[in-house]
Image (cartoon, rainbow, N blue to C red; front, side, top):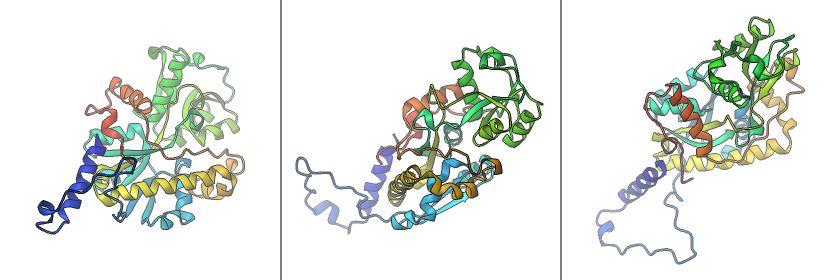
Length: 335
């Protein structure tokens, strides 16, 4: 497990700083008395600076709040947030070491891990519960389809090998549509997929928010989304293995998650106070600026096996993994 390796490195680094001759001659440190907490080997370590890559989506709102309201500075952190226009550019930056951490999904994280760019998932940013979901399947304006069963054999616009395809498969399976009857039309770019749907050039599409809400506002019908039933989707904060192997890296991640909790609590208590920031950073479409429902954000908690394992199983079934990845390869423990 990753937490075992990290603690070991921290302890080795600590011993290396002792004056020569001291380590062998000094009396062993006393064990904590019963009931007393163990000493944290990182208690006096300064946090490393951290660069986090995000996308311009609502998932990152508490990070932007923490930055704009000085919560990172108050925590003694040096945090830079870089907003990438697309996931591919974010992943390239992570692979090259240009960023230390990223906001993404479990599929992207597993692919990076399998390709050799070690990822440690520190927390779920959205998706601790199904209510925090933000993907769905919509049909074009004027469609006579009323249930997902009506889409059996009908090509549904989606991107391939993505969280959107995973949600499409999951929602169709939950509706009782056999896998062989799930037809797909691959349209990688969400704005293009949205336009094709609204123009009637495709009958249905898997869409993320805010495009899903915009489609409904403009006359499309949402047949299903991921806010009920099985908890299908999580946005996660992934940190590089190299970064968390640094004692100061672990310290920074801990402090970062504390700042996340404070920022998420502020958003949850008064979401409209942060609407302008969301509009600016997530580039909400103009028709949704005043009405878009701001999500409720979870407190920091690592993704569970119940969240990760079904995604990895789907990736294996679809031959999307270049190496066999399991839950323990991805999730950072010991925080």
